[in-house]
Image (cartoon, rainbow, N blue to C red; front, side, top):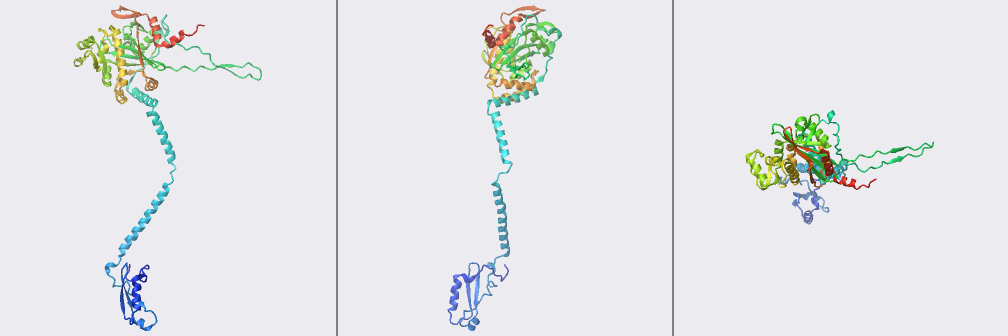
Length: 483
């Protein structure tokens, strides 16, 4: 504020003290020149009353001289600094300026942006899909099937077989019945009759083609290749049949010494088929002798088997005194430090498990010997492995899949594996049943070309195997009324 400048809002006449001083001055008989101090809330002022004006106008009120108000008599420390006022003004302006955008922002918040509703709907749909995939059994099985199928396809060794049979092996040997799934009772096709034309021509009947039945029984071939011997052979030949409709798993063991026809080569033990012609010859031998071509195969070596069981954490089995003693004294267990088995319960590692599955010269607890006893142990081992794997944490199993699948050779693709798993994972806990080819009482033991072989009645074995695979359907056919 400049010196002598009077603010418009200052009016000293409105105070009580001013009025009292004014009355006191008026009441004086001979007012001289008076000076009256007036204290206001803002600053002190000095009011001068001139005696000259009182003499000229005796009947009028004295003239008040206020020219000295806010003159130099005001103490310097009481003046308001201009810089302070400017700072206060600028702060007030900034507060007013800042408050306005905030008020406008609050008004804008009252209305939702256009993209909010579509985004909320999209997120809700995503949440629903995630719940269906992760929160339901069918959803989890879907994720497992696709995840495992992807890992399977990326890590297994793919080795497909040639489906073409040699010219001399294309026909089924005379007298062997076809091993196919029994046909359902004949159903007459629907016949749709078109309206009678106006010209009187006969209506045409067009039969509706029957819808093909969905496959519910799948067969997979398991092969265990012994590479330790000079003449490599598949010691383990097992067919895994999974019935998705009945919820059952059926294991059929084909004894390694079964004497069969190898198409294009001649008669020999079936265990030599893989080394002499690969998986193609194995498929041909099975189809030629047993009437069944598997949907796929899984092959592992002995070294791969050891690593596979170790990766899965081992398997618990119960051993007899003779089995434990035999394994501890022979090289069926390759590492001497692993020959520590006892009678009763044992948790077998990969090396010990392979030795157990190879025992032939010691009977089982059910008095099964030779190749029959060996395959019986393999079946029990696979069932124990399945049961103990189902009790494991899915996270633990998933971590080991990549290493386990790398040990396998197969002709099943990743997409096919996914398709199979989508069917199998929705099954209830499977019930296991077993069959052996050749069946008891259907074969004789012979020495052919210096080798111990099993010569079987293949016709009888096919019929028995068919009854094992399709028991309910065989019973339903027997109950059909005779025509």
